[in-house]
Every structure is written in C-alpha cells, then in structure tokens.
Length: 323
Ligand SMILES: Cc1ncc(COP(=O)(O)O)c(C=O)c1O
Image 1 (spheres, rainbow, N blue to C red):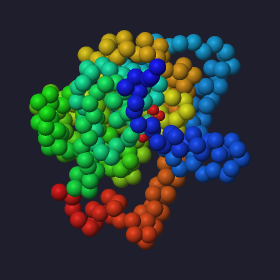
Image 2: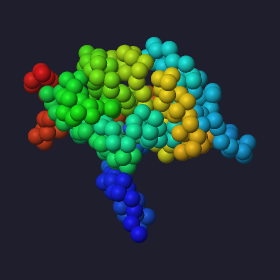
Image 3: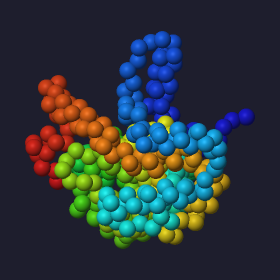
Image 4: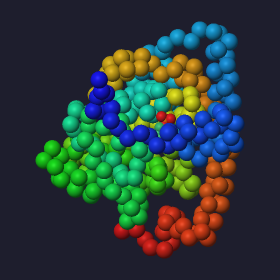
C-alpha cells in the first residue's frame, strides 16, 4: 500500500520546525518561537467577550456554508470603510482561515493540469496546495529589480512560455516572505495583462493593515471586480488559532464556492465567526499592537545594515531606483 502521488508535497518546513519546538517546550526547554508568523498579542477584547458570551449560551451549531450573514455584512462594510469599494455581502465567503480560501479559489477556478503562477520566493503553502490539487506550479522569480513582486510583463512571459498558457496568477501584497507591496501602477499592469490573456487573478491581502508607510493599502478590488481576494483574521486581527478568514468573489463564483465549501468544510467555526465580527470593534487595541511592530521594524532597519545586511527595500531604494 502507498499514499497517492499528489500527497508527495514538500513539508511546510516552518510548521515542522514549530512542531519540533513545541516538543522541546513540552519537555521543559525554554523556547523562543521564530518559525511561524503569529502575533504575540491575543485577539482584541471585544472578540474574546463575544466568544465567551456565546459559550455561556452553550450551543455552538453550524452556520451557513458561506458564513454568518451578520459577519458577511460586516466584512462588506469594511470594504466600504477601508477601501471605499462597494461589495455586496453575497460576494463574501467566510472561510476556515485564508488557507481554506486558497483551496476554494483553486478548486472553483482551475482544472487538474492547469498552470498557475506564483512568485518565487512566496509563502510556501501556495505551492504545496496547488500541487496537492494536481495543478502545475509556475514559479516566477522576483528580486530587487521587481521590488520582489511579480510584474505584468513577467506574467505575459510565463503565459507565452507554454502552449497551454496560464490559467491563473496568485499575487500577495504585502508579500510573504519579502514584505514588499505591489505599487498602484504595477497592480494596474498585472490586472491589464490578466484581462488581455484571460488569466484568473487571485490576490492574497492577508497582511493588509500592517503596512508602514503613510498611504493605506489598496485592494485589487480598487482596480477590478474580476478577482478573487483572500484575507484573514489571523494577522492584523491577532486571531491565528481561531482559523477564520474570508474571500471576496466575483458574482459568477458565489454558488460554485458555496457548493464546494458545503462539502469540504460545512462551515467555518461558529465561535470564531462570532469573535471575528466583534474584532472589527477592537481597532484601538489592534493599532497599539501595530505600533509595537513599527518600533521593532525601525530598530531592525537601523541595526541590520550594521551587520552587513543591506538587501532591504527602504535602504535599496536610497541606493538605486528600481527598474
Ligand atoms: C501570505 C500568507 N497567506 C496566507 C497565510 C495563511 O494564514 P491563515 O490560514 O491563518 O489565514 C499566511 C500565514 O502565515 C501567509 O503568510
């Protein structure tokens, strides 16, 4: 007996390291965790209170596969308030972390064997999920000349490199591990190229809220409605372990995603959905957490060059303008 070929994906090494570190901790070692991206702060107080009130009530049932209506409405309102984009709540799918959002996006957009492009380096789970689903991963190398982000031009080349073309592109802004954001002009070029070549675009916006210049992040939805946006309560909202995220879908994907989600997950965890809705009322606390990250960031920017590490965007920008 043997497992399927598709199960033969790379381990998610950061998770393996966390597992080893957890073991050491359980054995009594003093461990500092630097492996997975987790806020040290707890979920904001309104989220904790909402969850604890629901627990007092005792009954935690399923929700609709697409999520609690009140949470979908609250997320839609967030798009109006934060990005000035009007989204109908029907286009919001609440997911078991953004990780489930990737499964739902890939399954509803692509067929086995389709070519899907991601940046290299990128968040490693993208590649593993795509492979496990029988999709061909096209890795587009990024470096300082592209601000460590995929460009529209590179998407054109990757599409032309194979007679099958590209079925999809997954971008992440701010990106992991590089941390850089896609500038407005570059986002427009990516969207124009995807439109011209009929390539589905997926935009991972999980690090929105955690940018450190004066300008607020733009969503891909500020440029087009023909995109699947994936986001999460894990990072800015400090709710990694609650496993709750969301997708904004183009209308034609609402029902396909709902059908697949019904059978894959039934629904995202109800307790987490109730807490997530209340997390929107925790902005003061969350902004405080963010100002702590800003201090750490400033310290690193000052100290890393002294150790000879200068491959950092704000520093490189001073040294040489990007092409
Ligand atoms: C870029 C990116 N996308 C998605 C995820 C997955 O997050 P979650 O499933 O907790 O929403 C992570 C986690 O580190 C990430 O860095």
